[in-house]
Amino acid sequence: MTDNTSEKQASDTSKVFQQIGDKLKSARLARKLDIADVSRSLRLPGMTVDDMENGRLDRLAGLYRRGYLANYARLLGLDPKPMLDDINQEPAPELREVLPPPRSRWKPENYMKFATYLVATIAIVPPLVVFFVQGGLRMAEPEPGLPITSTQMESEAASGDEQRMARRITRALAVEESGDGEVVGPVTASALPIRSLRPVRELQPEPTAEIASSAPGPTADDEPLVAVELELGIELLADSWIEIYSADGRRLEYDLLRAGQQRVYFGEPPLRLLLGRASAVRLSADGNSVEYLGDDRADVVSLELLPGGEVRR
Image (cartoon, rainbow, N blue to C red; front, side, top):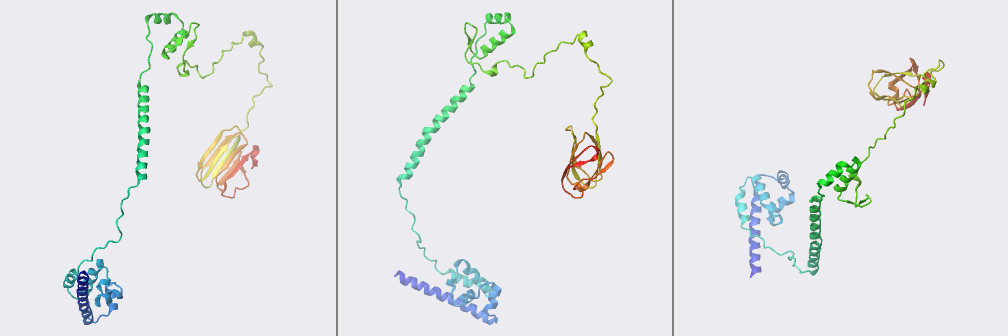
């Protein structure tokens, strides 16, 4: 009985699709349009247009069928509402079970894993919490101190500074002294007095008049030694990085100099120079031009300027 009903519904649906297709085809021919023209206007494949005219609407997906049919009818000047109403009479397809629902199976290993995690958590977490709480309470408790009596105060006043300091440290650390004066108990280095880190300068005795009179005085032959300095002139044709160091370790220049700048430096030779762009730097020593290897290239050059303006690479 069910099979006969399904066959009858399919036959009725096929007749409705064929009637709609005939209407579309007749209207297209009346307008003297071919399938290619309709395909270009609707931007649909020609096969889809042919299926609609031949009643094969069941080949089109239900999601797009109504839209395709309505657009085709409007293109031909037809009212799409009657055709869409006929399609609405089409019965909805029956729902079929494609994949069976998964059956929940009771797996003992899943419950064993959960029970293991739960037991491990109960065995580890609470002791850790108790440990940290008790440690925090012990840290917050004040350290016990020993009361100071009037007798102890009098004895401290009578003793010297070192003994008074030792007694204060002993009370602060809550330690006791033995009969022979040794301290019994733990003593931390942070609580003891620390000497100054700076070395103590011993005062030398001033020389007497006899020693001062016997000391040799300066003679006419003794002349002070004066270091000869070299005059270095720099002229920048373009921007360049310049570093200049004298023989005594002084840094005379360490900067990016701009084009057009002229500088003069005095330092003890040999002068060590680092030029970021050698072709942009003109050097002179004591007023004389200095030529060096690589002054025509825009490369980094390192050189030493000796007395007299000689260059050493």
